[in-house]
Amino acid sequence: MVVSNEVLDGLKGIGLNLYERKIFVALLAKGIATAGEVSNIAKVPRSRSYDILESLSEKGFVVLQPSKPIRYVALEPKDALERVKQNLERKHEELQERVDKFSRSNHVVELENLFKQGFSLIQPFEMTGTIKGRHAINQQMRSLFKKAKDKITVITTQSGLEDLHKAHFNTLKKASKKGIKVRIFAPIEGNKERHVSELKQVAELKHLESPLGRVATVDNDNVMLSLTDDSKIHETQDVAFWANSQHLVKDVMAPLFGQIGKK
Image (cartoon, rainbow, N blue to C red; front, side, top):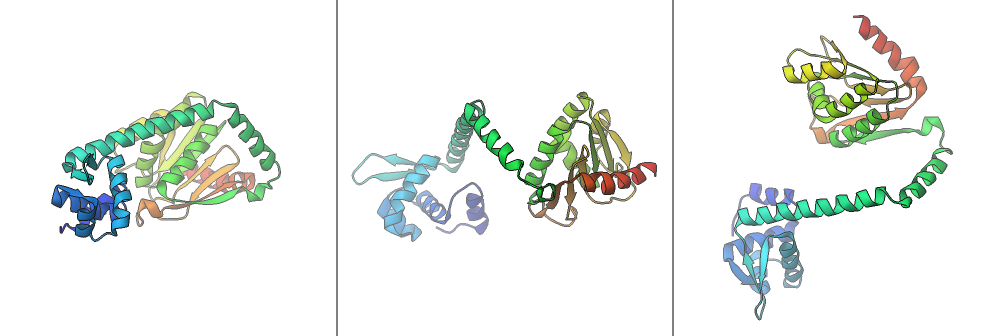
């Protein structure tokens, strides 16, 4: 029952904990086994094996065989993964339906009122935060872009321009159609022509000879400033600072953008 660490890491990556990985691999090696048999092979406490096998069954990795004692059948890995995929899609659809239903309910109005009440007590200088991870950063930027009423300005790097196109093109396109002025400063040379061409359709795109980092401002009050070099870190380690500050946007960032625009 020896498999490579890469295989075990792969199983971990799709949501199996340590005991689940051991039990699943042991059952694959055995084919059909009782909970006691598979726990001995996997060196997992027998008292835990029942719950683990039930969990694997619910996730689609094994099938229960009605017998005394109950035996468990290993599915062919490709079939198991297809079942897992289908289960995840079903759960995602169910969760999305619940979220949509909740978003249309009066409960959201109650939560919005609570937020507005709390928001009124917050001082402007308190509206700041540090965000870690490219995905979370893009989520915050997308939220800010969607709320834009007047203008969006972005300075970014070569790879940052690719990420901007991938994560935000549709949002920027909608903003542009609403009459919001979108400006982007970035190294254009070396980027995919399609990305550059499409971004030019929704924004004023100006070439920068050398990247100055990554920063985005929305209207005159929101700014996102990257604190990491995207060429030197993994996207999960990306960190950005967000602030709702008219002073920072109007008195610091706007003059900077103005100087860059003159070059």
